[in-house]
Amino acid sequence: MDIDVHKVAMLSRIRLTDDEAAELGPQLNSILGYVDNLQQVNTDGVVETAHPHDAAMPLRSDVVSNGNRRDDLQSPAPKTESGLYVVPKVIE
Amino acid sequence: MSWETVIGLEVHVQINTKTKAFCGCSTEFGADPNSQTCPVCLGMPGQLPVLNMEAARKSVLTGLAINGTINLESKFDRKNYFYPDLPKGYQITQFPVPIVELGHLDIPVGDGEKRIGITRIHMEEDAGKSMHEGLDGVSHIDLNRSGVPLMEIVSEPDMRNADEAIAYLKQLHQLILFLGVSGANMEKGQFRCDANVSVHQPGTPLGTRSELKNMNSFRFIKQAIDYEVNRQIELIEDGGEVAQETRLYDSVKGETRPMRSKEEAHDYRYFPEPDLPPLRISQQEVEAIKAGMPELPGQLRARFESEFGLSSYDADVLTQTRELAGWYESLVAAHPADPKRCANWLANELLGRLKEMETDVADSPVSAHKLAGLLDRIADNTISGKSAKDVLDAMMASGDDADAIIEAKGLKQVSDSGAIDEMILKVMADNPQQLEQFRAGKDKLMGFFVGQVMKASRGQANPAMVNQRLKELLKA
Image (cartoon, rainbow over all chains, first blue to last red; front, side, top):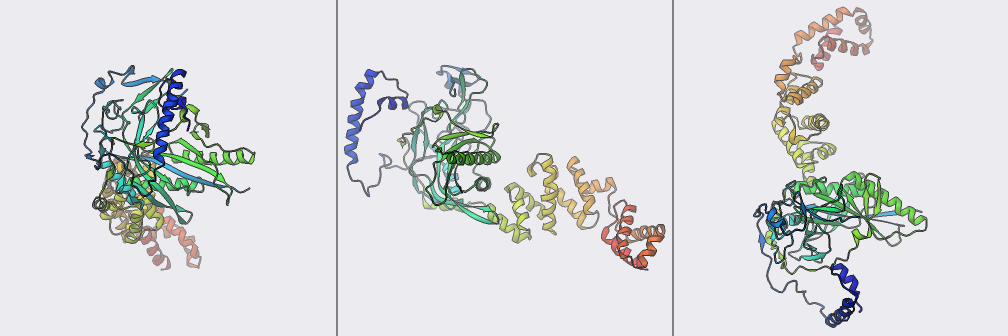
């Protein structure tokens, strides 16, 4: 299996130089090779492990417990306007 | 060439919980931007989601109402993509094991019914809202909606034209409202529909489908599907091929267009959500939810037909919403003598007037109790059905009760036989020629005399009594 490093980087929004891509390609391929080995194991009839802990999900009551903390929460944002986050235009 | 259309629908329903799916932020619509957020729904590092039990309960209730299988253990997964209204960089959803599978909905088609399969209902979280219009080079993001719980209801590709698709959506919309699991307001985005549409020739494999998005009314959904079906047929007949793509409906131009590549480049890389263990529900909990199932539209229609003797048409009209059905039942409780009269006056007279006022029964200026008061006056012959319509107009305008208006306008019907006889005798005296012809056998002049007497009474004489007394006096 040969991985498209640039595509994976784009999906993860990670900027890679060609040198980095050349270095990471073989490393990722060797990881995938290892996963391929695992895929060989016959798991017919084995129940999938959905979660490492055998715990059921705790549930929350439907009660509002958070107030308006906008100023606090928006303080790390690079740019806001009238309470809205301002981001580079999404649709061209 | 004959073509068959194949349509499957995906409906996103906002579950009407007070708080978000995985945190305690309010879901109230219309709040100040970003005033209902917290580190969990903003995707801050290290925050852990905890599922809202009410979202799970309402999903199970919906699953039971479509006769679906409830998975006593279901799982959550991450769907990964980058968009600024999705702060975590992934949406928590359910992929291989949703909470509900394999249900169905019966929709009216022609005089009969058609069963539409429902593949699955899964729970997921909504994204925030992006605004682009009127902004130069930037977009604005409001994350109040980020994390609001959704049910995605996915149908089988069982619909064969836009009308069936709309019938399914209306049936589902009504069911959701009866269950009380969502406000289902389409303009507020609480009930959103995507349509998968393809065409093929019967007996051949299914065609390539396109996915239509951005349709926020039943009318637009129908227009978009009709447009898309024609586009695909023309494309194939001209030797082209349908591309598997997402298309947006432009309601102004009335056409669909492909989403730009940037908007749709997706490779979701689903994987199990490590922050959430499996959701387990016991059979007892499912039974308890089932026990709280409200009366559903079909059951209500059947009961209205059998209990009140309504036609299937009237029963259908009066069960469109739970509020309207409740209003009708209050009306019958206040005027129990004649449920059919109640149905006629509600469906034909009151609803018509409310429609003109662009309001509904919940905000009707005339209460069920007051409308019953008017129907009582028709029943006891105080007023005719005809003048009752004028009284209702006045009630709608003033909110007064029927008796006050009848009194003030002097509309009380004349049912006093002495007074009616007096009017008849005068009409006979004034029209000797017609009287002679009638007595000579020209029976159809009866209508002339009825008209004259009603006119003399300014419409207030009881028509049944006028008829009866005329027959006796004219022959004398």
